[in-house]
Length: 353
Image 1 (cartoon, rainbow, N blue to C red):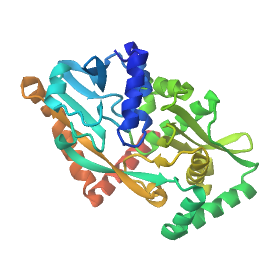
Image 2: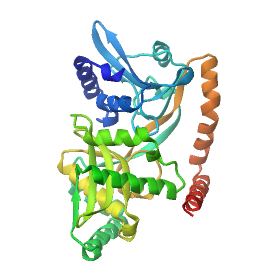
Image 3: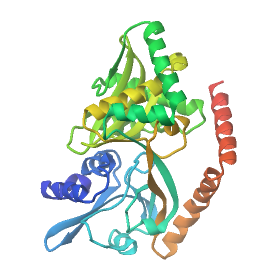
Image 4: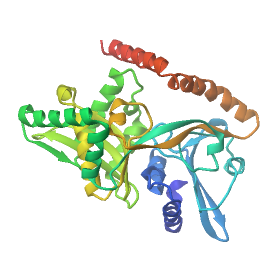
């Protein structure tokens, strides 16, 4: 069980991540796995040993019939196995050791040689590089997205004039009431756009609250808020390590939509992150105009599953793969994806009637 990891094992996990050469994504830290395990009783972590030393960690959730999933699947934005550099293990051997028939992932980290050959799809995850400071990033935006930056900064000035109070930004807000407001906004957004409301699931709301309170070297919850006076008008909750801010749940007050408060918020987050020594904001997979405007580059994440031959693996394939292939087919065709978004928006409007 993740909660039973010893201090020695936890420290070894952190050291292996530090030596991996991968971006220090907080979703890959032991603290995130422990937080998920507190709300998902079937969470597990396999520990690989060599000569009396822990050399690998494989966090997962175990479902019926040995169907495994990435830890926190559905909300975790970076997944995989943590291994000593140079250590090789096959996916089949790992699944066998965990008594899993299959292991499903949707945000597998690039460089995961155990599982990437088995991925069914590769997806872009936009990022913002602020390693050279916010001024350098803003200069890049002026070159690559001049209209976006000019318009957003103009709206920020207009908000300061007409918003009804002082405009201020807090990078790391600790007030749980503001977090609750963010979740209410996000739930309304999900319903309005016809998406599945993640915050309708108690385990997700509880997980986010726990992570908001978490303070650890590689994984801390960060609630960033844009205020007008004492009123929050846009907020974002994500996880940070020393060098990466993993963007997760952004939302804003629709009453202020004409000012594009979400875009203003992201610019101030990038500025504050750079000042805090963070070099990269990972915006997460998924198409969105604001991501295209803000990004400086992309990482790659992978979706798919690893399976062991057998009846249980066949049942897993029948229950998951046809739907996944349909979603992949639609996503790879922008016109079809656009029709899909329109349909979801119509469904959202109907639900709101």
